[in-house]
Length: 111
Image (cartoon, rainbow, N blue to C red; front, top):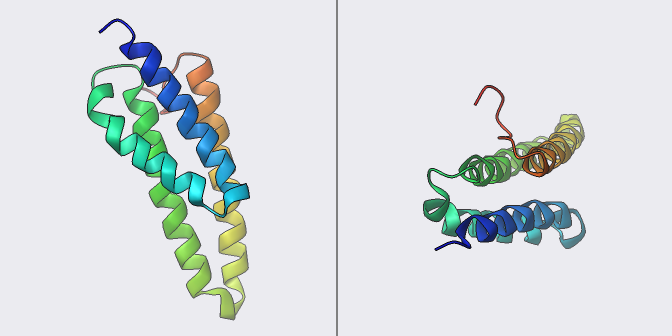
């Protein structure tokens, strides 16, 4: 299928956009993005878009772990620092991934 790379690029762009929209949707965009990445992961295997979908999946799970840890430690006041750091990390991952996609590169260094 000739349009497969174009479709996968669209999926990767949509994933980053949904992750960014997660800040407005209370995380629902992140959930949709990770489901989309899991669904299209096999189609992307061996293409330039595989690392982007993997990056999006890893970003989701890392952010979820960070927010859970932050919530569990909120009462001892370190939780707000953990949640803030997780938010900064999440923004970094979205921006780095989106820019790498735009430049036709992998978001992972040295790959």
